[in-house]
Length: 127
Image 1 (cartoon, rainbow, N blue to C red):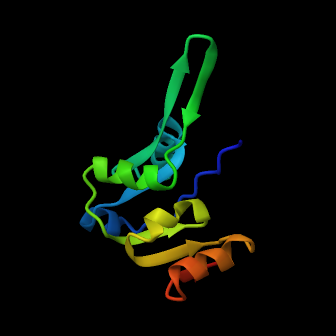
Image 2: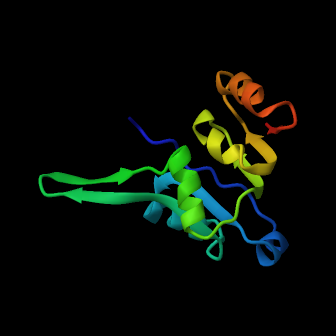
């Protein structure tokens, strides 16, 4: 199954300087860190999927999704609930449900009704 692409939102420098910003993604960690570095976000924390190796197969990414992503954030020292969570996918429902403020970033027409039903109408939809 192909991985979802990483989404990087533009963050104001003062936000990054004053607040703890954690990028949580199912992307493999080296890719997520490189995308953040190339976007000028080298000072943010990254919680991402990992690579695994096997004697008889090529290395492959093991995504941190759904409840695993929330656990990975807690393992990284993130207290719940988080202040803001941004996502476009129903696979992030567990993370979105731990947030005080929800931001749905360009969700698909298929995912939007499910997200709004599960999260309520308070979620901010960013097109």
